Amino acid sequence: MNSLKQEKEALDDLAMELELAEEDQPVLYKIGEAFLHLPYHRAMKRLERDQAQVDEEIAKLTEVVDQCECDMKELKVALYGRFGNAINLDE
View 1 (spheres, rainbow, N blue to C red):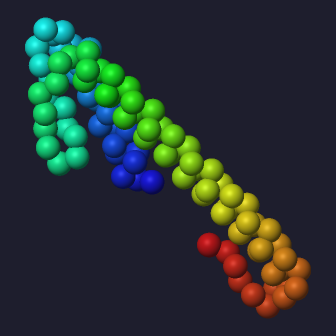
View 2 (view 1 turned 30 degrees about the vertical axis):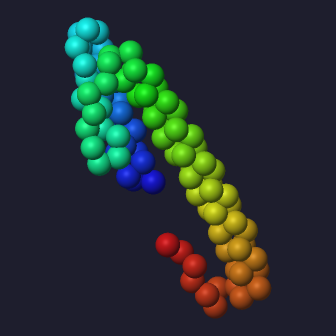
């Protein structure tokens, strides 16, 4: 999750940099482990697609985390109901 947040931050920084770039100059864009010279408009389209993909992945992971936390709370209630104060489940 942290790596996705860092990637989103890097893409947001790139978006700000591209706003300042000249449209007639090619842009260095990272694809995988390589940097390619892309025309400005193609780089912007790629950036928008990459941002949407990262946002979608973050949303999916956030949903999974929320579901896990909900399940943990339910289990905690059930275990305390069964064992009372004989167990300690605090973080």
